[in-house]
Image (cartoon, rainbow, N blue to C red):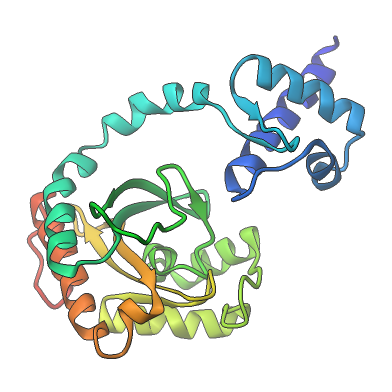
Length: 261
């Protein structure tokens, strides 16, 4: 195989892994070949190699999901994120006080919000479709809004143009100027809300986590069904999210004012 063909194959394999990682329900050979605009035979060859090496696993219906090999490769990097260990006690505290089904941490990576930690309440009947490594758009999620809203405006626009503004629900913000106004509100109030913008019936709240230099390094968020985060409970949950994020920030060395948090 020539060097150019090898490079193309590697590029296609990485693109497949990225597409599968961003999919909630897995992707088939046909899905991948169509999105990457390559022949099914070429996609099939690469998929067989990735499956054989455990980077992907093929389900009964023919759709592919990420395999365990990727977890072993990323586990070392994630385990060295001090933020996760520092935050865990405060995440647990938040779950007890809020009585919500889950709480999570996310960071910005290549224009996406990526979950690096998640804790679930014991015996909760509600399970949110969230997992460590899950990548989500920034314009439809509370964590995403936090992670980009404090960036310079031209950087926000660059990310929106890079990743697009797909409409997830009828409430999704799909206009750049409207999102910039939303980002202004996030900066003003210090928290963000996803009001059924990424999934119907689900509401999310998030606040920023700062490092010792005052830079936002992550977002702390929570999500549940709308009835659990309604207008009555929203102020209390927002307060808990902001205070929990502030506690983690202080542990990370941030000494700024409470108003910034």
